[in-house]
Length: 125
Image 1: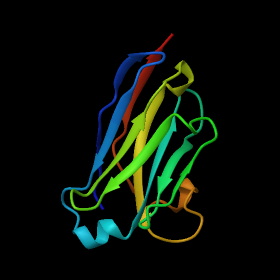
Image 2: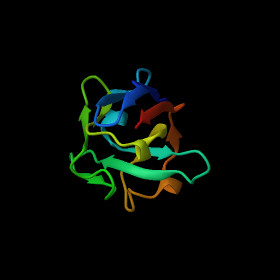
Image 3: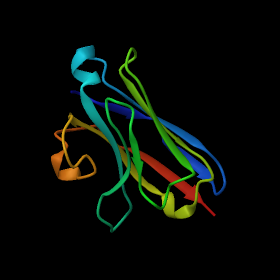
């Protein structure tokens, strides 16, 4: 699964951004069978989970983004989105989308086999 992330940018605190992750060259059935995750990495920090969505549409979120971020999946378009509202300066970082065949422990970054190139989100106070 080859992934292309987009939608990052600079926004003031309280603003919104929508990230998209496309898999244009992937067979639809393969994409549909993947867990899709969003991770982020702030300067000087380790990569951390933001959100996950399974083929069944089940979602999980990091506590720090619950109620503010929403991930969704469009199987026909082979796209995963991350809607980010009420952004805070601590949300700043490079955001990555990732995919893997569905399986246990979907929140573990180590289990994801395909990663997009990352898109930078900067939230100013």
